[in-house]
Length: 175
Image (cartoon, rainbow, N blue to C red):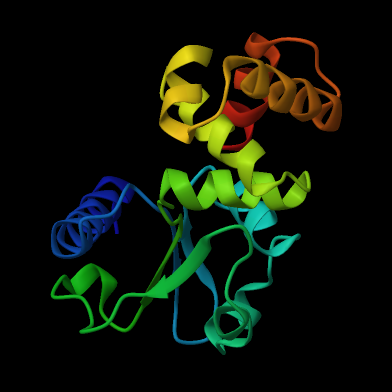
């Protein structure tokens, strides 16, 4: 079978999946019935290492051992159901590995938990991310501008940084 025909069939299947689920572009692996890799996207191994701490063996994916554990850090492995209508992919299992889009609030909460931020520090962090100046943060939280500055100072100490710019960089790297 010509490689280009296989790629078109894969693109068609993935497009159908994306249309149905509304998710971002996943990494793709296609396994035959005996767990032979028929196709693997160029960045599958890198994504699998992020999701599972290593690139799992095709047999682990095919038997469901890896899928049953679920990925870490918001990754998920999905086996496409309803078999392919393309004769090229008949009898093959198509697996999609993708990072789930997490809510920014969830990511900030995770960041706050990892760095042991207080609830007030987390509130100030969120408002800072939204672009509020200290006076606006103080007004929204019902505290003084000096209180906001004090909370930010403690926040900077916990994050081992010295400026608002470094704080933004630290949180954006985590998102």
